[in-house]
Length: 247
Image 1 (tube, one colour):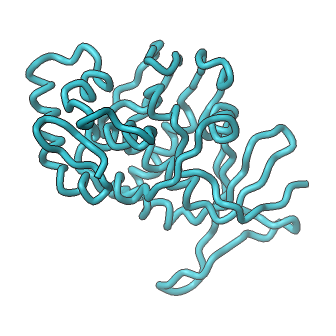
Image 2 (cartoon, helix red, strand yellow):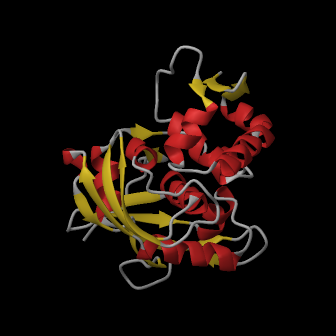
């Protein structure tokens, strides 16, 4: 028997971005490949992009309670309506489809050693019930009650939460960015406490997150970052002289 705790979980962990679990786009493709970065190596089988990162971050930071299961995984109590709002999902059907992708994606972290695992980010989602079988509900401001959900974090997700560098920030601001490259860049930079002298070169960031990108696509990604620059500035990231720096 497990009990829920009200302690806050992190919004994300550093290696979620550093290992590129999520493609730097809002329209990801199904992939099965090994990705190697300066921070480690992973194998991914599935379809994960920045909208999926929005949802996972919203679930973790927006969970109302959490607890340890007997097998070491983490279960959460969430309000799906609030999670959908935080993650800026355009519709219920899109939200559900992205949740399916999150549960189906297989993650194998090969490096670094302390994060080695094979599993899923999310294993299971169902309506939350009390020990007597009664459904847990929450008052709906529009009238009546709405069901709460129980979310079980998978082995890979639990490994990251428990053993990686924890990050705390407002995912709503990143979810509101228009382009996936802007979201990916923001998430990557927020894993760093210290920035290079003069900030990061925009092209170097794009190339790090989009290896082997052709020149015409590199130009498009630059344009997208500039279009999102007002909202990036609200997050604390400023684009100036082809560099991006923490404000």
